[in-house]
Each structure stands twice: as structure tokens, then as C-alpha cells.
Amino acid sequence: MFHPANTIRSLLQTDLVTAPTREALNSRLNAPPRQPTFFSADEFALLQAVCDRLVPQEGREPSQRIDIASGIDLRLSENKSNGWRYDDMPPDGEAYRLGLRGFDESAQAWFGQPFRNLSPEQQDEVLAAVQALEAPGSTWDILPADHFFEELLAEAVENYYSHPLAQEEIGYVGMADAPGWQRIGLNNLEDREKKANSPT
Image 1 (tube, rainbow, N blue to C red):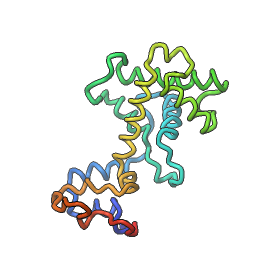
Image 2: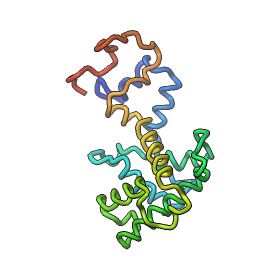
Image 3: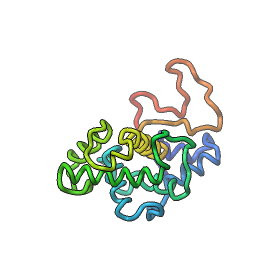
């Protein structure tokens, strides 16, 4: 398939990218929609709604949207972690289930509706309150809201920017790992790097 010049997708087709890197990024680019295997259907839909506010993707065609929630669900279903957590936090899976319940509790307390039914502005208000330790709900008495929010936001952003379409959006070409980087001086760019004001 042809992709426009100076895009990550065109770069992936070149020998500037090693085979393992190409395979990993193509698997993300071509991943089919998946059903949740850790979360229930309702929990997963709520997680998707939260991720849509944490990393908005307005303007993307539906087929080009990056499925952040599926990456979180897959990690938890495989019982993987980054090897650490805050000492006041439960294991990741339990924290996510509690945190999602907390979002709905806060939404119900303030607006009388589940989080998914709120307007984007109301959803943002709930998320900001969780981050600031000001959200109502009994869940936040047992789950440190600020630590949960920090972990969720970090994982959402990591899932987003590890995807080739997001890397393309910001002009990241660090995955071109075959030849190494030779031009390291100020404003001295490799041929594969996007130049200022160049067409995308």
C-alpha cells in the first residue's frame, strides 16, 4: 500500500527501520478491533469514555482512531505491569476497577447520571476533581484518587503515542533505528526527519 512521503507509514516500508521494530509498529497499526478480556463490557465502555477525554481524538476518522482502552485491557488481561506501584495503591487490575467505579460515583453525586451520559464538559469536571482529590464518592476513601489518575493518564498517553498514527501526528521518526543517527548538530537533520514547513 502506498503512503504519502514523509509519513511514518511510508518510513516503515523502508530499510531504515529494523524488522522487529517494523513488525511491532505494523501490528499496532493493523490491529483489529478487540473485545475486552479483562473488563466487563460496561467497564470497558466507561474506560473508553474516560480515555476519550484524557486524550481527545476529535477530527480523526473513526477508522483512524487509536484504541487506547484496548491496550490497557490487554495488559491487565495478561497480568503485566511496569514492575512498581505506589505503596498505597492496590494491584493494577483492582485499582482500575475501583477507579472506574469511582468515576461513576462522582458523576452520580454531582450530576445524577453515569459518567458516560455526561457532557464532555461535565466529564472533564469529574476528571479534574479526581485529579485534585476533590471528587465525591466512597471509592475515593479507599483508592488514592490522585495516584490512580496519574497512573491512568500516563498509561493512556503511553498507549496513544506508541501508535504509528500518533507518532506521525507529531513527526516522530525515532523508530528509524537501522542506520543510527549521524547528524546530531543543531538544526542538522537526517534525511528522514521532517523539515520545518515541509509538506506532510
